[in-house]
Image (tube, rainbow, N blue to C red; front, top):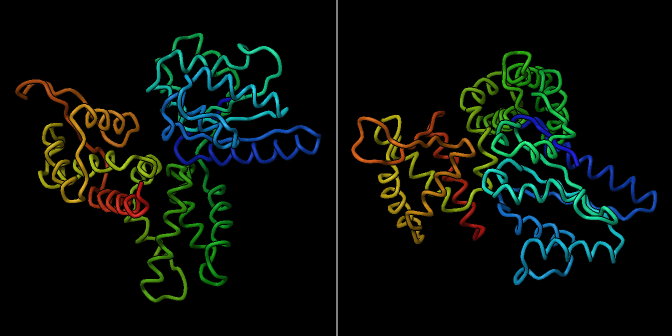
Length: 351
């Protein structure tokens, strides 16, 4: 097993998938039946869901009900033995699963290779943003997980320039942009130039610059389009966009309620009770049945763990005990538009 660690948009997922592609191809050339499976732990938040998703991606006929996680894992191993098949399972956003699950579930995954005798049919690649999010684990489990670590650093300006050059050649017609446009974005975002080294932010900036040029009726993307693009993008919003994209519909509705309340009130933080009232109004607008208080609280905790919002118990100056919620980045109007568009797409797809 291995552990890939790196900040937001440093290429962790891309590296893992490329490794899986190359490794499985090489193994098959040598006569081994090896598959690579990529599991998102934000979408699959329990041990049961992770194991079932692995079986689903491998098209193994394991029932989705009636088995415990351990029984399903044993059934998975039986099928792999019968097929003489090996699997590399990448668990992306593993810190999210670890923070929600009991330590036994994390320990089960960490020790699978050593615990099961015979052929080692399943191997894991764990992916997380940083090791501090695993600090709550006991030393033994943490030691097993972090035995083999690959740490990815933020992108430099030169590295981002290479990424932008490749992606621009695919996305745009020839002659629509020049190298100065790419260099301006790379220098703005490169970690060696004072930026965050975030590849997604750089690509979002390039895409938006192209959209602005198209709206202006321009034949080429100019430096001015880049300036306008960078001015309207928030690094923080781009950083949380991946979590927002995979959030459930009602998580998004709760987030929208928080944003609307903060924008309307002009205060730094709002009470969870006020968020619930706003959430119910938004549900009525969208024709959705609102969730109960306990579920709303879970949504807020989930958003807080992911860094999308901040949540803490109220202190002095507030009557009674409540949870205070805030969004510590912005601009909020840009974030609201992004969430509304995500909700619209989610509803169109019936998700």
